[in-house]
Length: 191
Image (cartoon, rainbow, N blue to C red; front, top):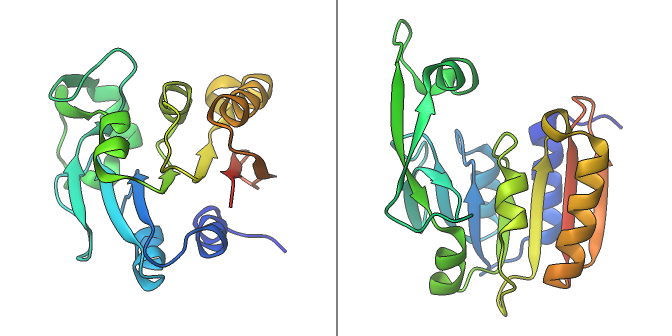
């Protein structure tokens, strides 16, 4: 069976997210995966570069990027026009171009601790390496579902990242599935 990228992510969410879970979703996008979690009665904290939540239902919405490797909350990150205009074109109106865009940095570790986040769902176009490598162990976090973009760092680096996360956070690897687009969907969970 072949899944589209988002269809497979939705399937993993249905298997690993439970009613009442508090989920931090990085890269919420247009809300397709979020809607599945809403249907499961999960409480979703959405983070995306988009300035507005695409659909109603979020417990909280934050515009910005997830990152805390050396950056605390309330910092800003400068995004180049080349990245924004090619990677995030869906967030622009046709004809818009930007030279630079400054986005807030969301400290994922602080948010996980403050909100007692149970699960982390990531599809953040290569930035998952930095987020996953800077996650602190948490007594609340029991599941991570991430799309690992191996074209940014290579399969060897992805494999090492998968092992590091499992060992450091004491979350056993449940699934690592190569997608048609060359990315991996990875699930770590202790439940």
